[in-house]
Structures are given as structure tokens and as C-alpha cells.
Length: 61
Image 1 (cartoon, rainbow, N blue to C red):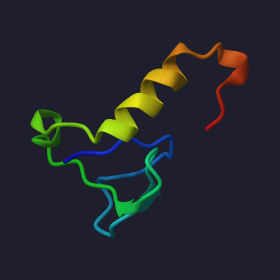
Image 2 (tube, rainbow, N blue to C red):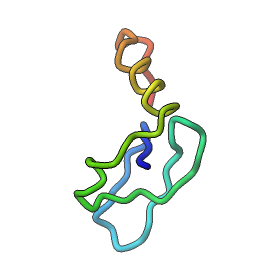
Image 3 (tube, rainbow, N blue to C red):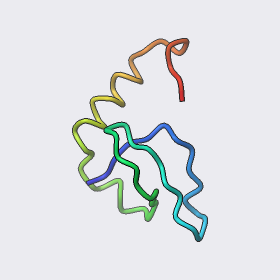
């Protein structure tokens, strides 16, 4: 399962970077190229859709 975040993460760093997900978890960011094939967590997906639908003046992150 993959998650969404508004946190900036440098995933090429050798040290795991922890990010806050849109569904409320705090996880190590990982970008292995295969994650795009995973199903997105439903709460993260709903939150991302709400964020993208909001006017830019209401977006924070």
C-alpha cells in the first residue's frame, strides 16, 4: 500500500526520511520506482483529491 504526503522528502538520501501521510501515519519515505504500481491508501487518495480540488489560496503544505 502506498500513501500520499505534502511533506517534501529527499528520498535519494541514504538515511530514511520520515514524512507525515495524509491519512495520519508517520512513515519512512521510499521511492524505489515500483511504488507507482501499488494501490494508494483510500484515506490518502480522498485527501489528495480534496487538496487538488481546493483553490490554490486554500492549499497549504
